[in-house]
Each structure stands twice: as C-alpha cells, then as structure tokens.
Image 1 (cartoon, helix red, strand yellow):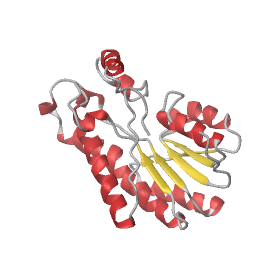
Image 2 (cartoon, helix red, strand yellow; image 1 turned 120 degrees about the vertical axis):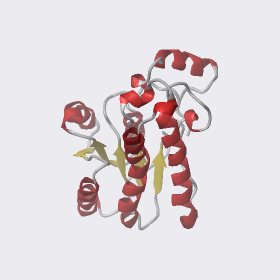
Image 3 (cartoon, rainbow, N blue to C red; image 1 turned 180 degrees about the vertical axis):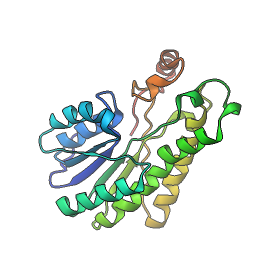
Image 4 (spheres, rainbow, N blue to C red; image 1 turned 90 degrees about the vertical axis):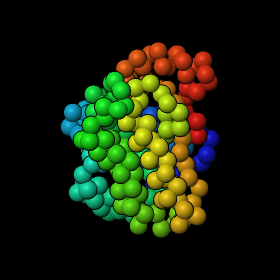
Length: 217
C-alpha cells in the first residue's frame, strides 16, 4: 500500500489467524502509517490474534463479539476515549453454522439463517452506527463481499444470501451520505471461513481457472 495515512486511525474487525483477510488488510494499513485497533471475537481466538497484533508496533487488540451490542458499545467508547476520531473501519466478519453449508439450500434452517444474517450482515450496520460519531471529519467503511452473492456457488448456500444482503446494506448505508460504496470481493482465498466450506479445494481450483480468485479492491 503506497498511500501515506500517517496520523489516521482505523479499526479492523475480524482477525482470527494469519490467513484472515482482516489480517492482510491490517498489515497494509499499518504499513501505510495508520494507528490500528484490531478486534477478535472471543477468548478462544485471543492468543493467536494477540500474537499477530503484537507484531505490528503500536497496534492495539480488543475482544469484540459483533453479535453483542454491549461489546460494540464498549469498544467504541474506548476508541473515542483513546483516539477521539476514527477515519477507517474494516468489517471482515462472516459466519454461518457449518451444517448450513452442506447439502441443499432448501434445507436451510430458520436459526441458521438468522445467525448468518446477524453476524454477517447486521453487524456491519451495528458497527457503522457506532463508528459514525467518531468520523466527524468523514471516513471510510469497508466490508467484504463474494462472487456467490451474484452467482450460484455450490454449498455456499445461506452465506450467498447473506453476502447479497450485505451488498444491499452497503448501498443503503452509503446513499443518504452521498458516499461511494466500498465492497472488495474476497474471492476464493484460504480464509478460516472458506476452509470450512465443503469441497473448498475443488472450488478454489475452479476459481483460479475462472480468474475469480483473489481480493479485488
């Protein structure tokens, strides 16, 4: 990343391990000079995430489960106290129960659908709302979409519907603010979520042949 972002603050949601897209983005922002707050979901992911965060001098790590409003509120209260302003928010969070990514989409459960929408879609709205008061000078909010939001990808199932809803949410968040939607496509990377997909390796080979693999910003 060649941009000079010295003196700017960013919060990155979704670091789980070194394969996380959120981690790659965090490294790029840090190299450009941004002051980073990096979040991870829970205690189970804390050790690996913290080891990564410590490798970026000056970066701060916070536990935040984006399905819990009180944790989001606590995080942004801390960010306001420590930094005052926020310039960039990266939302790289997606989840659906593993059983929802197997078999026929027709068998999607009500609870699985709810969880996928809550964690993968509503969380963007929740963190954007919390971040807005800190972006008094304007700012950027970035989230991750995927080819499966537009075309059928075997076994992507309810996550495809969630990504389509996420894209629509971005448009509605951007519209009244005359903002330009930012929806990088995460492609067929070896992220923690992608590796849980049935037949992932086969899909990855197919996407490489189709020139659909990789992050497009």
